[in-house]
Length: 265
Length: 81
Ligand SMILES: CC(C)(COP(=O)(O)OP(=O)(O)OC[C@H]1O[C@@H](n2cnc3c(N)ncnc32)[C@H](O)[C@@H]1OP(=O)(O)O)[C@@H](O)C(=O)NCCC(=O)NCCS
Image (cartoon, rainbow over all chains, first blue to last red; front, side, top):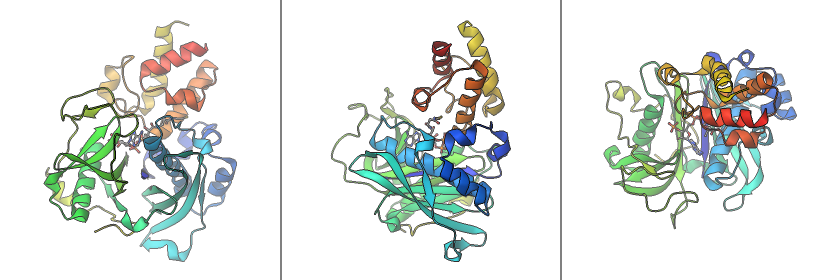
């Protein structure tokens, strides 16, 4: 299980001044507000906390459809940045934790966080504590939001990368949706891979990891509406994307960052 | 305040943050705020604060969780007036 979230730091909407004065109080716990104010990179720090909350929510909501997004209760705690945290020119990684306000799924309450940050964007991945980060595939890419459909590019990026990691042809993979949650299919069959997608401004991102073997239906998933192309409330929608093939596709065959965490490739 | 007036004020608050102009031009009670209007989720929190200030009401996170469409927002606000 995992969740991810990307924030475009250069998007005008990321300017803290564009928010109402009560936003910070509603969203960030007092200790988070303090950490943001004292951080040498306050903008990245602020959005790392936000992205951690969103990533945690995406993870928790998959396991518990009744989990409410109550941002101030999802408190991210990051370690201080150190030299060792540098991932390349201008890119740093913060590590942290987030305690969920209640246990979800199979006894998950503590999440580990990794926030990869440049001057342009912040990308946070949340995993259950103790999960193998080396098994997580992560990609972050810049797009032209005026010309490209961010959701589509995020899915194509994930397909290309996950196919490479699995050693299969990208044409064999597809991404479908259960409700709003993306799932990975191989040769038309749902896999146990857990995929999280995110897009904001000029950035798209995904994180993908092996999940538990599927033994049944996901809670909240509609029964038997598995037939591709048959829409049903909460069931499968005909949202299928093969690997990206448009003119700019070659450019995105490799993500701008193939970060993280090891990856499975 | 009648529902059409609430709707008008809701749309006015959302308008600066809408990314899909066509969806805004055809806005209805069924329009999805995140998926159709493409308002981002951080901005949604800000919009909720704007609803609170503008209508002088309080909206809990649990209430926001039930809001997907413009109509959900209008009904929620109307129920608190
Ligand atoms: C799910 C949510 C966190 C997504 O955040 P976002 O900033 O709008 O969008 P992102 O680009 O980061 O993520 C979108 C992707 O997340 C995935 N997603 C959507 N809902 C999801 C869920 N419940 N669980 C896991 N993943 C989900 C989808 O893949 C989606 O991609 P798509 O839009 O191309 O289909 C957000 O839509 C949401 O529901 N927030 C909670 C409600 C809220 O904001 N309340 C305010 C409280 S005051």
